Length: 62
Image 1 (tube, one colour):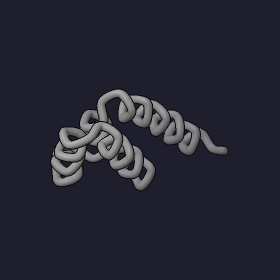
Image 2: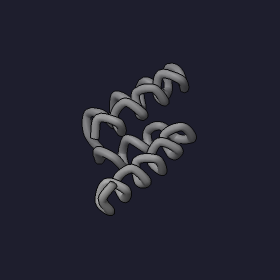
Image 3: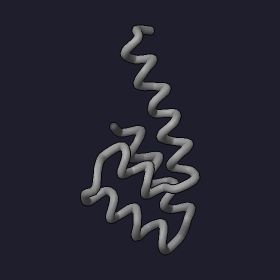
């Protein structure tokens, strides 16, 4: 594994940990403040688990 791939996977792991604790923050760090952030904020308000699932999905797609 190259250094670039290793760096991306470790940063993704950190983002996933942040997304589990505070899903909107994880999405904001991964994609910025935009549509994905607003959707995640709404999902987190209506249910914490859907917010986590969406945040991990957004980070994995990055």
